[in-house]
Length: 273
Image (cartoon, rainbow, N blue to C red; front, side, top):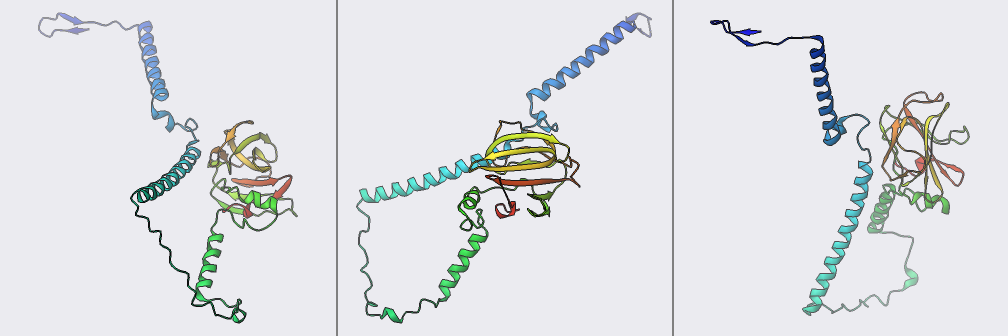
């Protein structure tokens, strides 16, 4: 109760009971919960909640970048075509051709030593070897036809980490172990379809992708899978999170395998880790 100090007249009074206190508290709590839910659903705040955001951004960025590169090539080709068309319309094209150099026509070809190479030839060979070393299709011109088909796919590494156990068919280790922190995004190595997403006692959460050219990629010991069988995925798209599940796992890592027509392949021969 509020009173006037001079006249002691009652200005305001409030009677607190258990019913109106609970009613007021319930209305306040419901209002706060409602406003919080609205803010999460209809504002970008939801992307700050772990597990709620869309993890397909990287694959979409790769796809848009590829489209942008294609558009740039088409625009450059069109600009060259327009320039040639304008020159043709203005009759400014230089149609004169240099005369062939016949000064060395009398050289005795039998005296040419093809085994000798000059400095320019050596530099060209070195440049071509360096380009082959840093090519996305590592050694694409070597091996059998089936191996070459796989090497032309330009596969990407599923995670960024360190290889702790190499491929070895003799020890029945049909992949590579990549050490990485638990909870890191696991990416698809190439475009494909999910054919299996299961949990086993030995390998934990395992997801298998089917790619073109009869290629399969297998990812084991994950903590969580984001895709289910039948889902289409793009190269670089997040399909799960790394972990340490399964009895055969000795620490947070990804066991990554590549299979081609029922034959295990060494991932190091096809991916730059």
